[in-house]
Amino acid sequence: MNNRCFLLLDVGGTFVKSVVATLHGELLPNTETSVPINSDGTREEIEHSFATVVANGRAIAEYNGYLLAGVGIAFPGPFDYNTGVSYMTHKFAALENVSVKNFFHSLLDIGEDMPVVFMHDVTAAVLGELRFGAAQDYKNVAVVTLGTGLGFSHTADGEIQFSAMGSPSISIYNRPYRDGVLEDYASKRGFLRAYAEVRGETNPENLTVAMIGGMCGEGNADALKAFQNVGDILATELKPLLEELNIECLLFGGQISRSFRFMEPTIARLKEEVPTLKHISTMQNLSTAAPLGLLSKLREEIGC
Image 1 (spheres, one colour):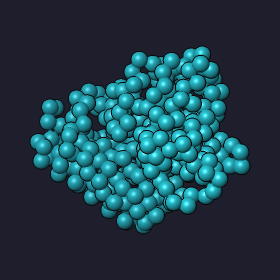
Image 2: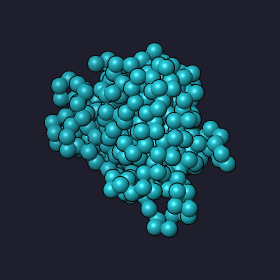
Image 3: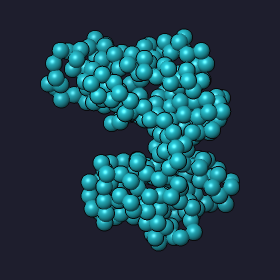
Image 4: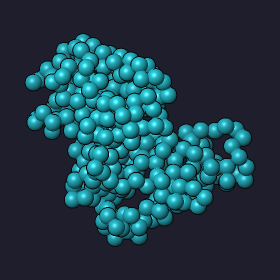
């Protein structure tokens, strides 16, 4: 068992990333790889990317002296994480109603008998933080991910809460807010909107959120105000939900959370407003929480 490993995949809209992990719970350094994928491509193109990343991952594992024992895949939704069937139409449309799980089992690098598990990326991140990160000491945990979209997942009494298809039981991205939904105001486009509103114009410099975060670090007042405004929106909208779920630990993930410190002062008020809330921070494993969650699920799958 000492020389067996897992291959952990994170499927995005433009790249599939992978890393190799030991059965003991260690992500092996220098085993990361990335393969381009076109989420608007044909089924054959998408499956070719999957096959390539698996072949690359297995080769890297064997080069390091390990044999592949299972594959974990973080996949966007709508998706049935229990059966491995995709129901997406906004991206990966060519895979609609396709058993992605059966395709992975058809690969010679995997075969029919090797464990293949799927998780929503946010629930994988929650599990990773429960087992290896900032949520280890808490029973009722919520994770909010800030990126292209707005993700949410939570636990109750130490157990992740799933929908019937294995996705998060509660979604917040589509909650009505102002003239749209919350994701319009608290995701990539929300931060860009907030910065434009502070400046009283559109986004003339074609800035990215990372660039606005960098400006915050330089003390730019408009950029700081934009982050604080989004933080205020999130705090206001999350408060009743956190109270309802008796959340003790609130964690933030996703690429935008790398600049979390600039909205933290406005988010921090939740510790005073939500009686059960004891801890607010970014995820301890900001870059690796989802792979660590997949690793935990695979360890449970094979009983190690």
